[in-house]
Length: 166
Image (cartoon, rainbow, N blue to C red; front, side, top):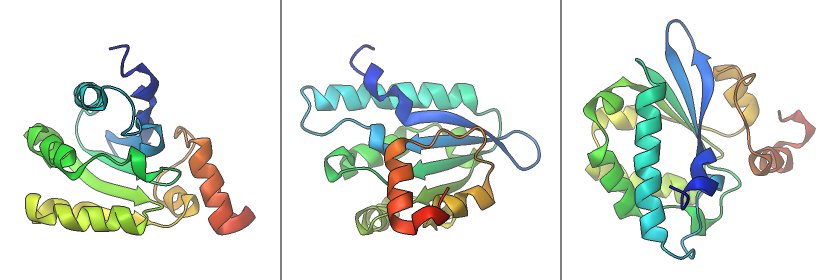
């Protein structure tokens, strides 16, 4: 587990949303390993297992997954095959209880990536995906009081939106 220790902060709990136990789960891809690190495949496999175990502990019922795409270099974006395997391996309960996948600061690459995934995922899942352009838009959707926004994401938001950002 020490191999994935530096990357565990890619997944965190961001409080609750709406009525009931709708957990907000934050996935910050700027914390993922670069594909050039030694044992990249090993690290990614174990990181996925850690993330699934963490999701199973954090998610009692419905949840909202917020993907902070900004501040991520292309070398940190996992390969398409890895993501497809993750989706197939993910427990049905976790797939069904996902209320929305909110992608903040999606680049054209991330949007194209999700478009390439469409043949491999259900249409119900596709309808759950929502793109936001700023942290201010995210703040309208969920309270950011308990959400840890990485500095790289805050800086990108500041660069894109000036002082009007969060």
